Image (cartoon, rainbow, N blue to C red):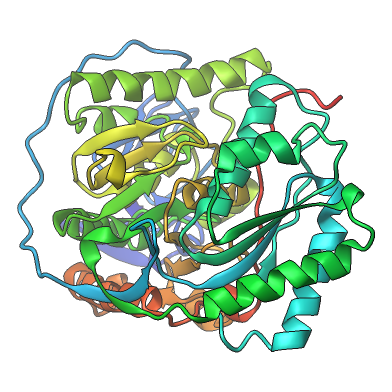
Amino acid sequence: MAVAIAALPAGTTVTVDGAVIVLREEIPAGHKFALIDFAAGTSVVKYGYPIGHTVRTIARGEWVNERNIKTSLGGVLEYTYRPQQPPPAIPDRLLTFNGYRRTNGEVGIRNEIWIVPTVGCVNGIAGRLAARLQAETGGEKVDAIVAFPHNYGCSQLGDDHENTRRILRNIALHPNAGGVLIVGLGCENNQIATFREMVGEHTHIRFMETQKVADEIEEGISILRELYDRAAAHVREAIPVSELKIGLKCGGSDGLSGITANPLVGLFSDFLVAQGGTTVLTEVPEMFGAETILMNRAQNKEVFDKTVHLINDFKNYFIKNEQPVYENPSPGNKAGGISTLEEKSLGCTQKGGKATVVDVLAYGEYLRRSAGKQGGLYLLSAPGNDLVASTALAAAGCHLVLFTTGRGTPFGTFVPTMKISSNTSLYCHKPAWIDFNAGTIVEDETPEAACRRLIRYVLQVAGGEPLNNEKNKYREIAIFKTGVTL
């Protein structure tokens, strides 16, 4: 197959590797067309791996899409560890960025005031408090004042309830916050007293249980004024790039995502890991079909076994809920040129570059270098949903999320969320959404030059330059719901 990097009308003659192909129908940008005649049941290869098989004959020059190919994937599998060669060496450039060194030694790239509800019942209070503090101060001495409403914290049981508590705890502890007010109700499952024990005592975190105070707005704003003044005293300083933690995510992908944006982010990931930094790859269902590539890059047999569990546990989650394991890609992905889950996964996992996988994180687990964890490429258990997965990356301790897209999306999670377009037309069409264009890779820029450009931009953002989601105040969280609601 070949991929059209621009729309090609029917009847167009193209030459690929010396073969002359006449297109039998219009091929949209990012979509595939056959270079040979395919019999029914034949494997179709892209990125060097099968992305499915034909369900009927496909003639040379014909459009290849979800109507004439389908997945070849099955259910839970057994795997064998076949270690690959280590990634190529990349020199340490001893780069720095201007960040905030917190009292516990961690580093933030933003200095914000956050209001975090323990339960959805107090979302409105959290929003009013954020608006009140913004009105009083203008927010001039901090990077942002944000409330993070959510639907959970009550009527949950078991692991589902603990997932909520872990994500909210990790938000409160994230070093991008210079001050945090945790607002509770009083009768919810996620009780302030027990949640406080889970979070621990920190000078930048305060708690308020609204049923116990006469006027929750006045009480809350009094606490927030103190937190604001404390955060206002924090200043940026030079921080080694080795302390940077970056989440890797894609959404609204198209046929160019696996050719431009995702490989570019993979080059960046390899670079950052070589500097001693940390990258985290998630979207487990979008590893299906490409999982052996990651497994064979595991640092050792223990990490390989954890990766196998990561994949098969998520497959069993689908099976337990009586849902098809390989129900993907989305309508937008198909419209963009992605026909099967294998095709999406083989493009998606390129964001992890070629670095060694050093560990696997459970949902709600936090990266703690101070506890003996090393830099490197990590895998994180979370679904493919954009908001849920991006929140999980941020809650794992990532300072910033690199989000590649071929279709476009405006959202941002509670840390800066950089949108990287796979094609130039999207970058031009949505300048208020897209921060960085990778579409130049199929035009006039080499991947290496684009990576140098991305490195410079990431360091600028880490040093305080706002992204579009921050400028637009698109900041939200989404928590993985895995159990019943009482």
